[in-house]
Length: 476
Image 1 (tube, one colour):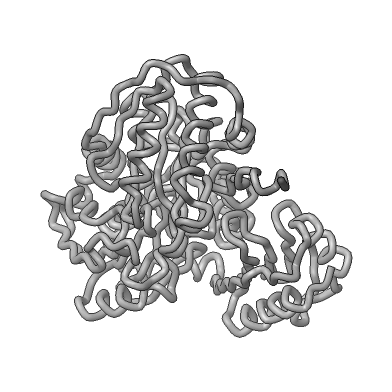
Image 2 (cartoon, one colour):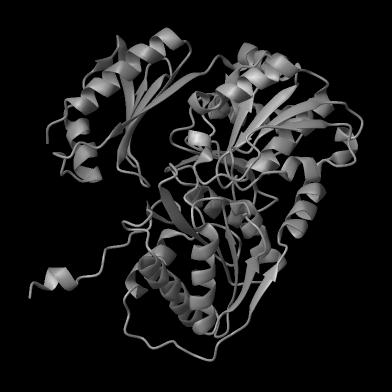
């Protein structure tokens, strides 16, 4: 018999957990292997009788997948606390601390399309498992170690309440309570349905929620809070004369922003607004940590306020490492995931929605005016991203992709000289006017991402067209 027939499917952890297509690679059997590996890791590397919190989103079969994980951990001697309802990823990160647990698990594929599901593992400090941990989990997937032990209890609990208290303690509600604001909230049929309504009870804020029913098909949309998925949010903001529109992805660790004029803001603009508010209006200091794909506007603000600025590869786990070291003011990534050094080492869409509401309350200025304020001082940011499915013929690795493009790099792109090339996560070309182009295979999906930021959209379109053509014509 061919030994490959008996081989178990390969499971790999990406930038934030393991994801797969439901019933293809994301199966009950494979999920049980991952849960057992987590139990083995916790018992060998963390604690003899570890405690784990578990949450799940609104995707197909997520509650059943969560129950399987809970039973597997329980059978291997872990005490388990399971959310009594669907829950956001940041709420699980908070629950790890609140429950004094050694780990947290979320059944979610985050922003991926509805045919996907996944598992995210949080360590004892409430952040995404770093590479050294996920490598161990991969090693333990089919370990012969016998870790069966006396079955532990599974407790079902409301884990939202403590998370909401944590959020309320961080945001200045004395400011919010004084200001009447109309907010349009779009949870995108995902885990954060009803969150803002509950948290802002007792304030003058009026919350209008759209896409507010749990739906494993996400209303036919891709549950990622980027512009092409937020048409209804933009229309609803304008129709209601709202002050702000906020959207969260399927598990609510990312945010999308729409201003008072119904305009979508890229994460580059949103992150820069948050940083500028913290520095200029709240007088706060600390390190600014951002991924390679987040651009120049926030870097300029950080340098203007004499803040240490650090760039890391794509993946919030790299930002979390700096948050855990202390001294970080804010960290962010291009996907819309932003976190704060004195909160949790985790990105959080709901926390950032509340921070924008605080910003509007404190400054008394419309968001559109605040954006003009920073553009006048630091320049404009016109960002675009396109994604390609990796061609079936493309057998190259990420390193081969980068090395080939670096070897063939031109002197200029769209008439602008290349002044620097970065190659530590994909390949990024920094141009003479600070415009930049990043070509990067995704760490979570079989796609290639092309990113570009420049001072105007005509230039951005020219640069990104060069990047698209380069990717499509690549032969290695």
